[in-house]
Image (cartoon, rainbow, N blue to C red; front, side):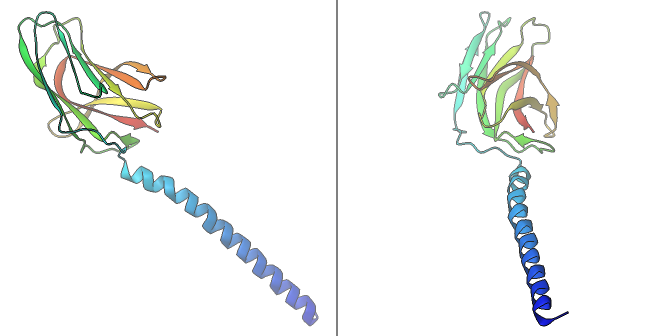
Amino acid sequence: MNKKGFTNIILIIVVVAIIVLGGYFLFSKKSVAPIETQQSNKAENNFQYGEVIKNKIGINGGIMQNAEKSVIVTIPPLKQETEFTLSFKKSNFEVRSGIGSPITISISPDINLMDSPTPINIKVKYDAKYNLPVPYLIDEKNKLHSVDMGGLDKENHYFTMHTFHGGDYSWIYAN
């Protein structure tokens, strides 16, 4: 093999190595970004967490909602008048799969309406960049329990949870 042929082979090897390594770094950088986003497991939001709504609800039922009307709680008729509180806090539950909502909705007192034919409806505006919110009740140990999805309005980006008692509620966006 002559000197010119040897130089051409070395040049081809160097060019192929540059292409392979360049492609590796180019594609590996693009695939790292979604993994970092998933590792945070929390959706971004600039929600007004300090807002607290109090309302007495009795035999006619009632509605509680935040100022933005992004959370609307409809309570069915009750046997006696009860003062309810609707408040919000940052979510701190563990997310194993999907993207966790940054908001936990608190409804108190935690009365039991299992005898009622009509559930409490919690209508929530969800982030349009996600497809499917999955609602949960969060217990005292910060464990999630699934809640009935009453409806999904994909056009206006609202979903509704159905429950028969107060407590802490949130959701996870399914992947």
